[in-house]
View 1: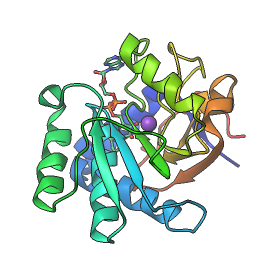
View 2: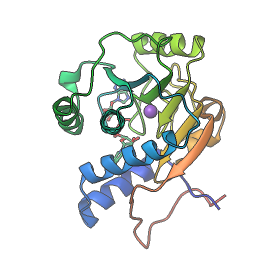
View 3: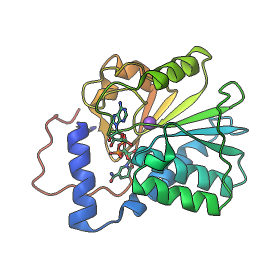
View 4: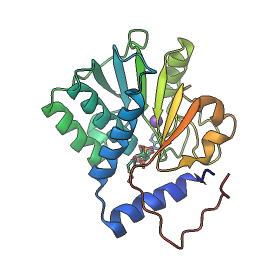
Length: 217
Ligand SMILES: NC(=O)C1=CN([C@@H]2O[C@H](COP(=O)(O)OP(=O)(O)OC[C@H]3O[C@@H](n4cnc5c(N)ncnc54)[C@H](O)[C@@H]3O)[C@@H](O)[C@H]2O)[C@H](O)CC1
Ligand SMILES: [K+]
């Protein structure tokens, strides 16, 4: 049996885990990154040149933490920001400081063809409007050359609740869902963008009286 969630429910559970239970955001980000590392380390991906595309929210923070973990294992990896890093959420800036202190390389321009694997850490459950035009173009270019993409939590551009495409969406080979599978990756067209969907525990706590809006499947 699988429990699906809407993005609003996931956000509520993230908040409950942090504010009521007291697990820090850093712990959740580190667990998300470790969970993704676990998937990448299983041998199904070419890790010879990993490019992590990083957005300005906590999905990006997960990606930066993952890049650091890969770098510490001597796996060639670089980080590329999508958007202005100065406008990033505090968790992203914090992860970036740590990554920089560890010497994780940053690339300014992406060459998708050179990357053996692209990690999509641009948008997750926070996506609430269509992708900006520039990003839509970038997404379409990456899809066009059929890069191998592993999406963290959600493929960028997929509405996590409805499965709608918000302007454009990255086509992933695998989507690693943190805590619970978001309903949007089970409904087309989002389902097609998500590829194989895996779910990984990151320590999210569910209150006893929590009512999920979607029945277990
Ligand atoms: N919050 C937690 O406790 C944890 C979250 N995890 C990961 O974080 C993401 C959700 O992070 P969040 O910061 O809420 O959102 P995003 O990173 O998806 O988006 C960032 C930010 O961008 C703004 N925004 C939304 N849509 C657009 C748009 N079309 N154009 C420009 N800007 C946009 C909006 O303000 C968003 O907040 C979740 O998926 C997980 O990957 C952890 O795993 C750990 C705990
Ligand atoms: K993502």
